[in-house]
Image (cartoon, rainbow, N blue to C red; front, side, top):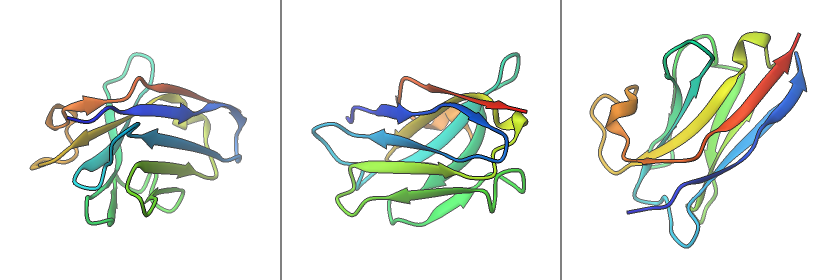
Length: 124
């Protein structure tokens, strides 16, 4: 079991950058896959990207690829989501979540441990 705590987020102008962090206080993500999801008002939660436990990353699609970067620190207790060139449509509540095993890594139901969510608002 792992506790997941998020930080970061806030209000930014279009074209700006933000970094969200996902931490495992008192523990480690080293044996966990950590995914990032977002949910805009009136929409379903959608997959953004994933940090595999081996340190490699995967991203949802062209909507975020090249703009968003997921990274882990060497100690394995934080996973960051660096967001650049933000667009109005990136506005959402962002969540990180952890799971030891994944089959359909893009589906939220696969993840057991969730952070509290953090609001990202991009003004146009």
